[in-house]
Image 1 (cartoon, rainbow, N blue to C red):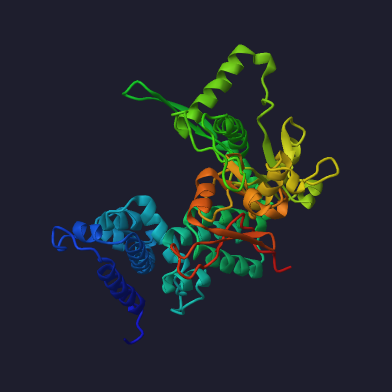
Image 2 (tube, rainbow, N blue to C red; image 1 turned 135 degrees about the vertical axis):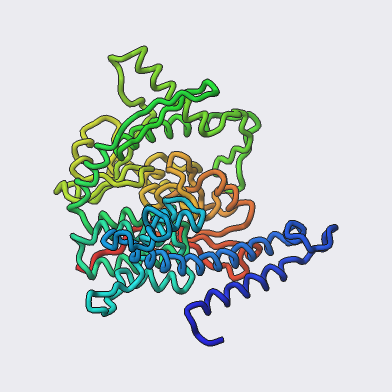
Length: 469
């Protein structure tokens, strides 16, 4: 097949058709002509292979759509007036044209335009093609390895840092984020892109934080079914306090003693029976209600409960100088180091400086459960549940022994510990995953039944690359 811009799309489409046909291994009662019948005849592994091949086609198609969206946007610029493509097509602007013709949301149309503009070589007034604004993103889109959603968050965050960032650092960050996005979901890419943006543009952290503070608000909506909905738009600090309270109370509910509790093979205090039938959302709502009742009954004693803790993480340099960023546990938007220093005087705020003389972190094999200090230290490394596809906050995690405590005599110390939420903790035990930590980075190795090649998957907290300087 000659190499053309659509060659990859055609190849992936043919692969998808072949994978689909190969996945239909079980005979079905309806003869297999119907799509639902064919899916019903697929093995679990076949369904997963078909999904992966199908999404490869979608990534290819969206790469083309992004370029077309950029062309529509250029041909619909306001300076053309009534001659713009959008106006001649009966639309207000390029975004509406794409939304109408593609039957997509305005937000998705705007995302396509943003990505297409960032990955298309602009043309100068003299007709010369200029460099592509984000070449690494463009190359990954063309190769079909980068979803448009991930490309959009990379572009938008690097755009914010562009004015104040060193060009070499910006290029390093772009390649780093693209490599990460090729293996991870857009939600995780967004978190890393935000963190990278603030590493590139430390002077912009405080102004961005101030802008978010001005957007805070609480609205009340009466629903027809009798419920009242409160919508809270919280800045990072407010979200930090809210998360600390809610997560603390929900986490305490999850850790309450249960009847017929059982201990896992690694001695990680596995407890399988949950008699509390409330959902997470209901528990969170009850936690807020408890806070309000406490405030109304004892206004003079308002303050964080002894079991409620907010952890603020920041570099020592940022703590000393007040410049740069800090991170509140569970809140993806950073705050300025100056704000973190002012908050440090408040009760129950813990800086992420662990392992001092006042606390022993490596307890050896004599103790089965990880201490609170050890879990805080592991949270600094893992960021919460260390599984690659999970963003559970540290309060929802359990300490897992890499070498099982009961079966292999694994020590209860940091080198042998990792944080996992309960579902992923059970998955590791039940499905036969293995975990190794290399250079303070946890890697998850799937069993052959999930990945015959057993390709390691990076977990834990992803940190932005160091600057070129």
